[in-house]
Each structure stands twice: as C-alpha cells, then as structure tokens.
Image (tube, rainbow, N blue to C red; front, side, top):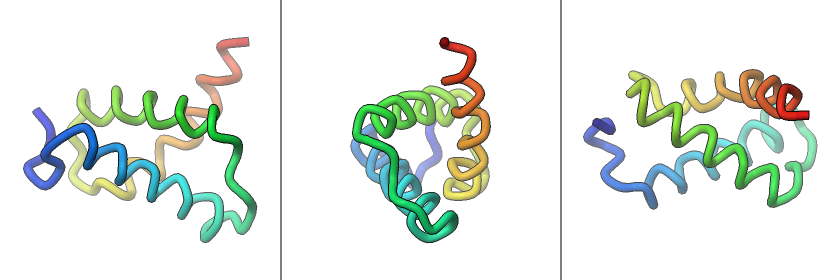
Length: 76
C-alpha cells in the first residue's frame, strides 16, 4: 500500500522527479545525469517506495541515491 498522500503512480513519479532535480541541482550543485539515468532511478525508487512505504517521502528518496548508484554498478 502506498502512503495516503501519494495516491497514484503519476504523483509518485512527480515526487521522484522533483527529488531527482533537488538532489543534483540543490544538494550537489551539479547538473542532473541524462534522461535514461533518471528513468532508471524513477523505476528503482518506485519499486522500493511501494515495498517499504516510508514515513518521510523526500528523505527516503534522497537516501535511495547511494543504493541506486550501487545498483547501477552491479549491473555491469
């Protein structure tokens, strides 16, 4: 079950995309990786989010970035 404030996949996608931009532009001060990497992150984060049902949406997604990088590294 998804938290009540995230009602559908479109809302969740928007939240993840927003956090993606914040992580790179605001926190790291660098440009975002290309669209393909963003799409992979959205898919990765959606799967995790729906499984874990976090208390803090933004912090949860932010904390997924290192896991995502390791996931990408393990793919190759």
